[in-house]
Image 1 (cartoon, helix red, strand yellow):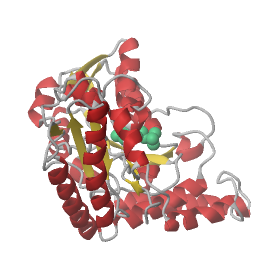
Image 2 (cartoon, helix red, strand yellow):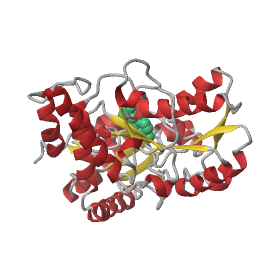
Image 3 (cartoon, rainbow, N blue to C red):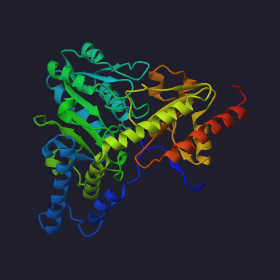
Image 4 (cartoon, helix red, strand yellow):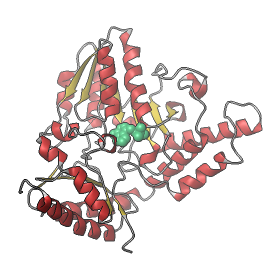
Length: 387
Ligand code: PLP
């Protein structure tokens, strides 16, 4: 058992589930056809794409015609933000509202649009990492093209009031995009209840292989393509389809939503145990709202600790976790999310993110509760600046 490593970094990526792998394999073998081809193997692959599309759309309360496969969450976010802006540009709308805690896929797309002459309002999250509908309401203007607010934050797990923001957007005639990459498969999602015009998904966050995602685009909204080329995805997203990925993603989403209530209750109990136990460490603080957060997210900062050192030490003690988001873990900059909610550079760099999945056990939680205090204590002892 000592060799068993605890994996507590599901927000970075989740293991491909056995069911998702089994769903993908035929399309990497016998059923290898190109969905655009008109002969048997081609139409078989096209049929599989349609089955996967219907299944995923059904799980989100959407219609199959509203779901477009992409290469992942980054592409879905880029497509939604850049193409919605392009669409509204013709009508003279050059203003975008987003938040200062979005994933870099949204923030980078907004920066790109700023270089093209768009104006972007970055709503500041409060100290718990929340955005209020009132903030959105006061930021929307006559020339606002798009509001983009994530459903769940990838670092601190906070859940935003997207359904209420959706009502505001509908009343004011503004498009709403939500990045649901961290939420999908972990909390129930109904696109109609959210009032979202566009919603991004990424398969590898809930058990399918990397390299597949999707963008929901509400019926009636004709989003210009981000990628030009062939007529795949009904002429809206060029590139030969990832049939194996689509089949795996639909299976993984269905699987992760099965018995969701029971899985959530188990994760919540584990999360609360971890938060309670880790906050007993002197000089620690919880980042993100205590209640309005993903069931498997724990994010804690420790004074006098360097996050990277903590992650390496934890790895040696058999626990794999992260400090900040995976996409920024090679960056010496402190996390923009933790800075946005008011942490000093030092505390932002001393953060630990544990993200649990359905495969984590209470023995894993025991192991984490044993390893983290040990690692923090050792690092503080080694540090020249005494805590
Ligand atoms: N949006 C959020 C909130 C994420 O957490 C991530 C990945 O971590 C992405 C977008 C990008 O997704 P992908 O890795 O599929 O490109």
